[in-house]
Length: 477
Image (cartoon, rainbow, N blue to C red; front, side, top):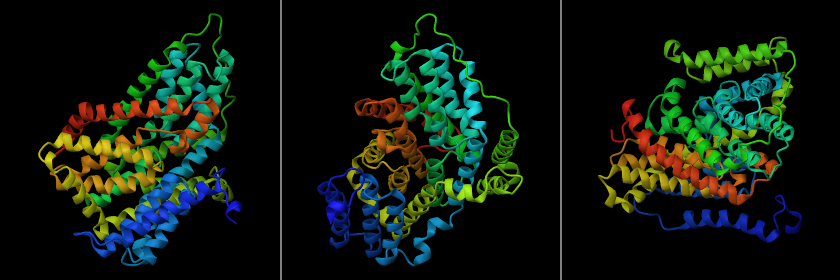
């Protein structure tokens, strides 16, 4: 029967290993003697989280199925107080905030407005590869306000840039094409994470940091104030690294004309999509005045988009294209992380880490550097960003608090490091299809991942920490 079970092209022996490993990890933790300082409930919660982490890392199951399995196990093994606690993530506003912004992105995409914006950006570059490249990097940040999802932006932009390369006679294996596609696969999402409405990473991270830190939900402006500097700097420095790596391709042969892309006359649907996106963005930007949490403008936009005769998407299209994987992954990740926190497992795990770096107590920057290195290592083995955040943020914040650091800064730091790197194509949905189309080798992706790790850590310590201190979030409380 095992021969009849397939996960992609995985051989039965490999499949058996990928099923057996998470089960073995789960049993090893739950059957082990209870460590000192860890409650029975905490041990069970840690076992369930470890199972989910390994399943997310190996992708044995669909990532949403893994999340749902984790919730079931929390209940069956009494790792939470009751079923309501296991379903914690489904009751959080941030989960529905994501549904709202995904619907907004769907409307902007289906209206044709996003593609029109991308075409205008490319036309502005004329026949200069360097100008094209710089404007592409700017588009990663600029288009996020209209189209938050990096995956959707990439899906739109990759086809347009392929037309440009074809017009210029640039083959897939040539440096210019590699530079454009490496940037699109490895840097595009950085523009998203700078915004609270920018997709799964900021949504999950903001909820976890606020929840663990015992603070009110992040406002749109507060998240932007804290995260725009690190992520835009990583985008700029990373963009320069890619340019320098493939610099030989940024000179075209003489006689190659500028690409001519004609978007056609603007449609009423595009105008409506633009007005809805603009109105929503204005509500997010002015949250300091009206006090509405970010979820409310997102749900207002979603409702308008789905109104018959007024909106841009009907309910059937919404059901079929919303991307329910993100909904279930975020909700289950929040539930698992909350189980670690409420059971005391996150605090125990952090105390264990504190003991291993006790010699660094008082050396705050060295402690944060050790956290950043650990976060990068965890990211290598955990391709699912929601799973990574659900595991690393509670641990980093608990460890930081125990060692005299500002927990908020510790949580933000591991987000900056973890979301700035892609070590292999399959580790990011926004990257995998681009790398495949561009015939990017795995070794090139690994080199990019290592370089971005160095860049993210360097930017964090030289610029971001002093900046956070200026805006009221110092490394020490």
